[in-house]
Length: 429
Image: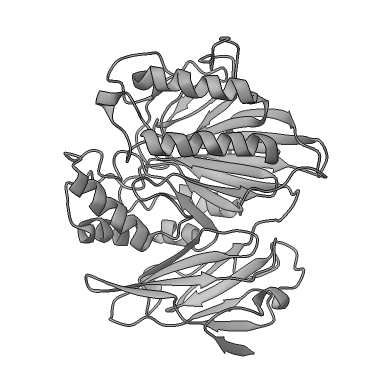
């Protein structure tokens, strides 16, 4: 049964309490096997909402068919249709969904699926990684998909074009290539996606003028299903269960002459997020695209090159208490974990929060920053998996595993955090 609607007022009521994993298909058709849309992906997921973006070659967009319960299919018109070179990009706003529910969608001949986030204490897995050659078809993307994570976090260098372009169309053309690559397209439509860029996939490798930044930001906002962010950077935050993810943009606001990686506005926002999450979230995850643990060195392309700002942020984290914070990071082409013993940038110089690097998805190996207590494992075809075990009590367990394309564990680390009691912890907006 198909119901035609422009909005989704009854979608939440239609979502039944379906267990994860019961809905087919587990795989999705490749972009070049389907007609209509060139690509589609889903992001900005919450317990009750999500955004799907789709690229059409003509001047019109087709409606999206949403099956949030396996019983009722809703027909959804796009909320926005924006013209781009050789077509349009359509934005579909999915609302009034039920938490922790598998939803399927079909648009322009492409099929996808995702799970809405849990609204309260819950266990889940998030995969993450960075650094892939432009339009990579590496089998690591299929390996990630087989893990069926709730979310895939891309922590930078979605491509390596190093664009020197002041028009958004050049950036969109590269995204067309990336999103059309078969293994990546399959992953994008098998789970929710979240991307924060780094140097190669932003304007940072170009002369980096305001015009370059504006073009890159415009393309990102057009093509990427994203959470709300500020005008000038892509920093954003979202909540999964009792876990607050805070994602910082290390490129758009960077000003080496002034010694800031985040920029004043984003840094103020980040500090406010940390303070709010320290009293409301059971666990905080800082998603940071570049190495944090690194020796101080002027001009370095990691936090060691912005040592004063690193000390400033480390002091705030120490004041708030680092026991419920951890970091996921990218840029370096390696798997690496530090349990906090080498993260000593606060006023007390005591060990602080643990740090986990995952890369490269599809690049040569390299080591950056450190030292790391669990060692470094450079190479391609690698990704990270973060498993959160939250049964609603005062302790949350976290299991980190760095994995290769064969889904073998290369490095691992486990820790527990003493969270706020379930009765007092609330999810930030």
